[in-house]
Length: 428
Image (cartoon, rainbow, N blue to C red; front, side):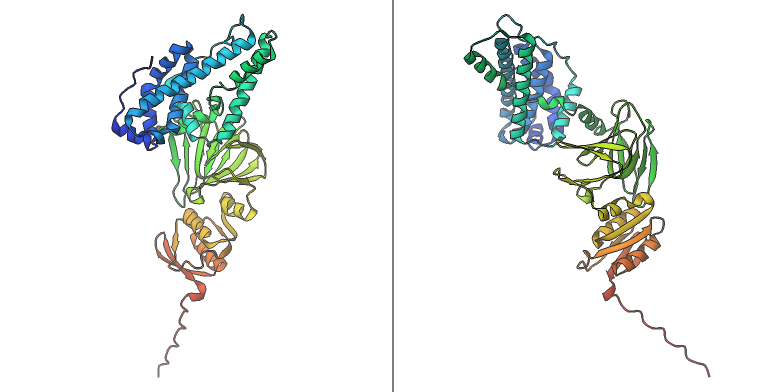
């Protein structure tokens, strides 16, 4: 019998339909237990019923654009639960038939139920994971069901059946896989994302022109670059042995029983007894840039996984495209770790971004026609005066300081010529 769900206001429905995760969370927390009980009336298995309820919320969330009115939301949730429960019952029936009528249909020990908080963490992980290709999802579901069916048949040593009977049973099993295969993957990163996203997460931040070093409770050392944010959970490293870098940092991890998880844009870095540079500024289009200085790290993005040894670099675009970081780009991105701003034939507009970041000086130009000009320069991060002089020489520009933290720039070819000093008149 369909459960009675908590009332949903028109405002909450509008937020849900508009894609606000806070609305999904509110509806989920208010109704997860009720939908679990609804599924459990059919299955008599709380853990499996929780999976079904969670799957129902994800299914409706993915199809929310089809909801025309608030009245359609509750029936859609009930229909999703009924459909998932029917799939599970068919799967069990198929396993029972293949094992023989005298065998138990569900021999494995029942999984332990989990809290609403734990299931919301899993849903959050799914929502923030890279979207899988539907064909790939279907393929993995089928593969999951094939392995499950084969393992069950081997375990119970099913008696021989006619070819048609076995074929029909196998087809039923393959089509009845639970569509929550992804909940068993990425548990570590799911929990880490949840803890990093909490309101009570700790935040350390540097401003433009600032650098600093933080030593975390597990002895991890983090050298923060300018205009960088480091986030970690309030109870780090107990609840989540993970941090997030928004900006750039050098991270040195000790030799520990488990690796530190570092979130850099759309990338997770697993580091243990290693040192590496991470960079992901929003103004870099959220590209993830990495360079390993010592040891090795495992990098996970989407469905891909790579191990980077000392000296390796990696550039990962938001769509998952990845490549070695070109040497000139690496010098501009990572030169700060040696106390320098280094540019080798990089566009002037990029160099201006770095000067603003590392020296806190915004340089503007009314003429933008020369901002793609390649610039080669090297300057210490300790002297803005030296940096501006190097920029003028390497970029063929003229820079004029106008106020603290602000300067104007013109093409040197168009800069006004200095007037020669007039000779002093001799006195008679």
